[in-house]
Amino acid sequence: MELSAGTAGPANARGWAAAAGAAILTVLSFSSGDLGLYFFPVALLLWAAAIVPWALRRGIGRAASRAWHVTAALFLALPAALAGSAIVTDKMEIAWFGVVLWVVLPLVLAVLCACGVRAGYAVTAAAGALVMVVSLLDQGFLFAAFWLFGAVYLTIGAAGFAATAGKGRPQPVG
Image (tube, rainbow, N blue to C red):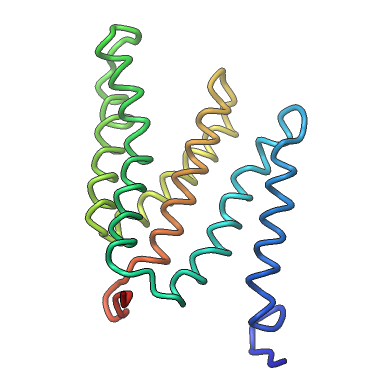
């Protein structure tokens, strides 16, 4: 059992501990009232923290990497699809700032992430964190939707940033 500086336990136990923590928080996400809503984003992040390092050690291959980028892009495009459908069906008044924020920006991030651009994942994580903070500061009618979409963006961005090769990092071998 070897411990290295800056670690909390043996290397072979860390993955299991992260998965156990994620499982516990996943169960707590189903708590009654609004409490579970606060556990859900942390559970998502813990699952990503447990899965991404394991997948990187295994080498997920080019096909799985491409599937990840496309799946992430589809999730990132969801707010644009929802806002776009509301605009098309005249269900909401058009404010061009809102169109840029809720339609154009998610589509740009989706394209960047679909192409595997690491900076796109970093901006996605930052945008998700920002949406979560703003939703806490101004808890309106759609608080839960903004909180959960922010959590999904933060998780996709952080996991994608960690899993996508940057300059000087080797590409996954498959």
